[in-house]
Image (cartoon, rainbow, N blue to C red; front, side, top):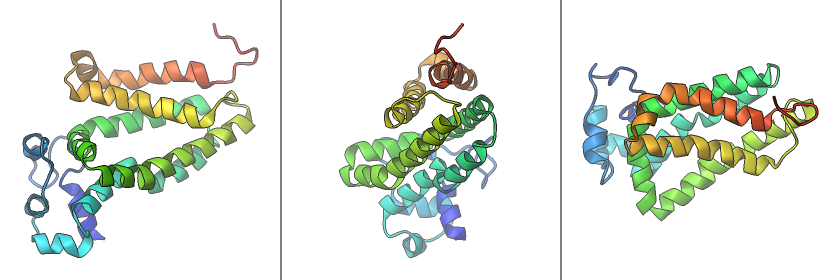
Amino acid sequence: MWLRRVGCGIFWLRRGGSRYSGRPRAYSQTRASVGPTTREVAREAGVSEGTIYNYFEDKEALLMAIMDTLNETEQRAEDFREGLATDFQGFFEAYLRHRMDLIWENREIFRVVMSEMLVNAELRERYMREVVEPTMRIGEENFQERVGQGTVRATDAPLAMRVVTGSVLGLLVLGLLGEKEVASRWHEASGVLGKLLLHGLEEMGDDRHD
């Protein structure tokens, strides 16, 4: 729905600034400590607060839609299926770079929503149930298929997926905290992380690396 996209666009991909005004918004930074209200959401989207409620039952539903969109939940399974027909290393590095670029470009979105989740147990549980757990299942199934192909070593798939995810989130937290090395070299970090993880995941014959 068009309004769903507009609602998500309040915080949406900030490639060079807001796609509505042509300049960066100060919204996320100023409201990060308390989270957005539906009135502010409506104002930023250029619609009435009542219109927001026509498409989202409450603020939590809107935040879930934003995070689900940024997670690329619907697209991820298809991307992984297509990736099975390609070189594992090339796919892994390209996909990790894509996800990390998307996350960093929208880091203020994550700051706002994560701060809301830390104090809202219901939202946190819903996010885990509706976004995180399905995403992990997609990753685990793809990982097992890769094992069957002989392109990755047989290991604990559920834990491996969480180690990869945790590594990316850990870097994001450092960046949000203002750690200078991560903040200034984020786009290099995906390459470094990719190589570190690949050496642990790739199937290397006698299980040794140079």
